[in-house]
Length: 116
Length: 111
Image (cartoon, rainbow over all chains, first blue to last red; front, side):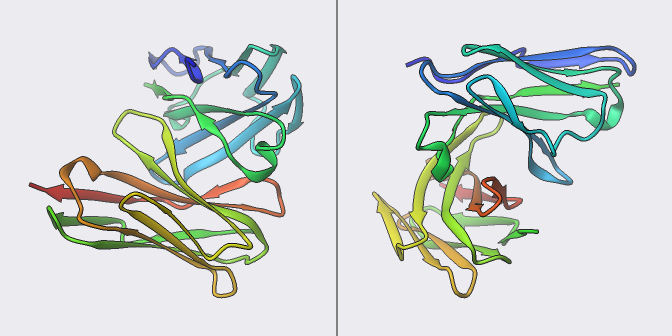
């Protein structure tokens, strides 16, 4: 199994630019989560989907952040416009039904974003 | 709001030593508690998951205990090895159906 695949692994951009992070969950997993990790705040849940439908987006910090899941094998997290305080590692995680209810998530290796 | 605290923030020990990592949480209404390992530049790997009805879980040299009433968990690593060097994260899964993470303990095992 390939695991959760995220791209890009590293992104450096300038303030004001649009950033798109991508995630391919494990095949057959119908829950997908986006987390953000910073030194100051640790790991925070941004949004999660079930069967491609956003369930809880209360962790999305601002309207500059948006996430989509057009199909079961692909999700994007977009930041527009980006700001230096968005610099963080963004993790995607997936889980099959039943196991998501117990918090058993499978994490990708993250996308490290630096906004200058 | 659930808060998870991990102590110490960093720990350095010589190889072979047994060690204990601490995790505390403020809301005891949890479904389970997990310990993760994170290597530099990598994602999170789940090490142990303790259901709220359980007291402990063991995997190899790792043992995790859970005292839900006092809001505490301990991860015990026996006979530590340099390959154990990583950041260890504790996370609780509670009534909000979300994983709440601690800030982690950065462990260095010296050869």
